[in-house]
Amino acid sequence: MKRYLYDSQFILKGEIEVSKFDTFPHKSTLIEPPKLGRGEFAAFRGDKWAIITERPIVPVTVPEMVTKAQARLALYDAGKLAEVEAALNALENPRALIEWDTREILHRDRDLVNEILSGIGLIDSEIDDLFILAASL
Image (cartoon, rainbow, N blue to C red; front, side):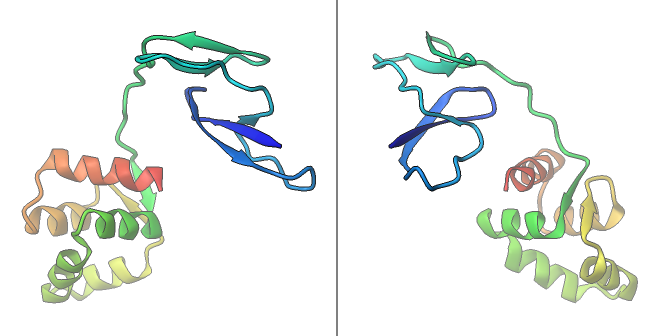
């Protein structure tokens, strides 16, 4: 049987095949969406799909913190992980290395985060983008 997946805005994002023994994924339904034309989206409304022509715009907020794993994955995806690790190793501040090695949560407003990321040439908006990406992982 098919499960139809929707995102956090309840917009159709795909379908998957599942057996009756599978656990149903969160944010999915058995209700088949309508056929869509160009520029149309299917929005799930509790017990049925609605066709909309504009995707809802949700303001993006920069997360205050992300896990170290999320940060490292975002840096890797952005091609910046090696640069960050090299910058950390070049620091002559043992406290910074201890902080990086042992903290499980990285805060956007920490001096270490800003020092390292601006040190590899990133500006504030690019650092914000990395935190947004990290929070999505």
